[in-house]
Image (cartoon, rainbow, N blue to C red):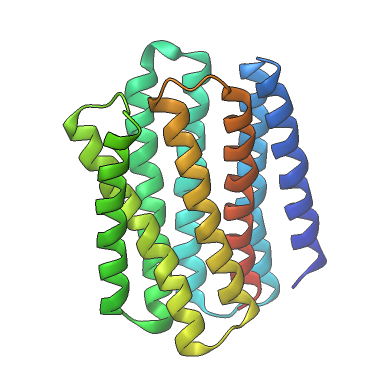
Length: 229
């Protein structure tokens, strides 16, 4: 993997850290700017990684689309910090963009191992668990958004199970291992985000830190999987 990928991954960590620190201090606008920089950096990791080792073109293209949708999702969620009036609509739009990103990522995994029925069952189970969890955690959302969130979590669990299936079927290569860790980090990050947005949580700073501290590793690791192919 090109040394430049490590540099870009390091920049992502620096920008993400600045974003976390600024958000904890209540500086939403400044935090948003660093969030955009971090997002740009993790997209660059995949592009640079592929350019130095052009393998698995379909995988690279699909993962790049996934990262770009993540970037646009970050933009939408960043805007809500400075325009709270539009927060409900921006959250839904962000959810849609991230969902599209996860679908692209799933398609990338399909290029490696095809469609595995057992992973579809895991995804369905994840959706059911998420639907029950929204009730148990007393999330302040209507039925429509509850269904959307359940489908979203189904995609997350499907993504993790597909990454695990790649390891089982084709072996524990570095690319597949980081893809699996990336998927797990996404689950943790989005769980924190859901609690943060839709429950009456008191310690918001801790959740913001946990969410961003797992979100950016998730994106960077997914990008690095391209460079390790």
